[in-house]
Amino acid sequence: MGRRIRTFEPHKVYAVVIRTVDQQFLFKPDHDPKHPLLTAGCPVEAFTRFHQRIPDPSIIDIIGSAAARAKALAPIQIHWVESNINHLQIGFSVTPEQLPNIAPFFRNFFSYIAVKLNKKWKRNGHAFGASYRATVCIDDVSVEQQMVYAITNPVKDFLVEKVDESPFFTTFHHLVRGEKLRFFRIDWDGYHLAGSHRKKSHCPQDYVQWLDLEITPIPGQADWPEHKRQAWIRVQVRAVEERVQEMLRKEGRQAMGVAAQYQADPRARPRQPKESGGQPLCHCSDHEQRKAFKRQWRKVMSEYREASIDYRMGMWDRAFPEGTYRPPLIKPYLDSYF
Image (cartoon, rainbow, N blue to C red; front, side):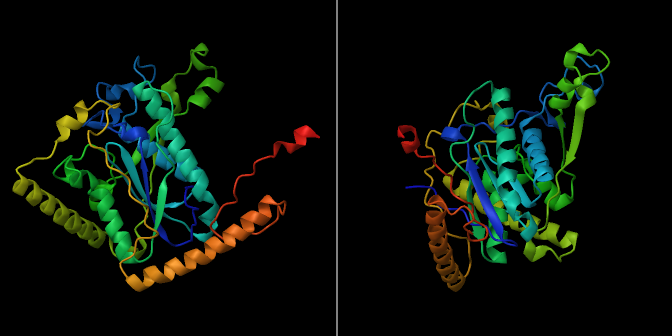
């Protein structure tokens, strides 16, 4: 069965999930805890001009700079970005003007990460196993639930006991303490266009770019003062941590811990990989709203199918429902026979 047709609406929050190919541990931590943007062993002096070591971005910097760069190229509103050892979770929404930016944002975001991961782990091929799954959150309660779920995912997977000690990329520290999300990338295109190593008066450090990732408060909390949002997230996360810790105590187990995450092989995969279930049509806390959304979604799908048939028949100016994308065209081979 083909992938579900994506539909996007402005001012709606979407929860996105994407997994690595074969659920490999490609997002395993490799950074220096004192300098999270650099790979362990890379000195901070590497940012100095003509230093013998070029700054080596960590997994944290790769994800952060990818999000900041993609957002600069195709602006959307990002509400959270969270990483586990083998998957990413993103929450986003758009204004009506930003609706066309969704596809280029994720194209730039995922392709940048894939290129950098392959270079870091010395591998080839796809980094992600399938296209991302974007599920709309109908009401504010479901948005809050999805944000907390994404933030606490490493805890629920028994990788760490507390989110605060997670070695993976997270926006938690920004959301609860206001820590700035700033990352770097080297403009290699500019470096090579300027003469590369053949020009002795410059070096890669001259082309370091610093990018800030802006996180937009979720719609239901947009009018809250910052300290109230921070307190709310702390309370919700602490509640999840306590439930998981109680579960571990009852079962006589313990979380894997941070040290085990650093020692993981990036090409390894879970011994008992999770099977992805069916994607929900939406996230919603109210049954009646869910049914109303389902009726509306079926109507949009009916309009999309009719528009798709007309478009493939040659009606190139056929209008499609807002928030959907035209299907790809396959050129028939019959022309070659005449």
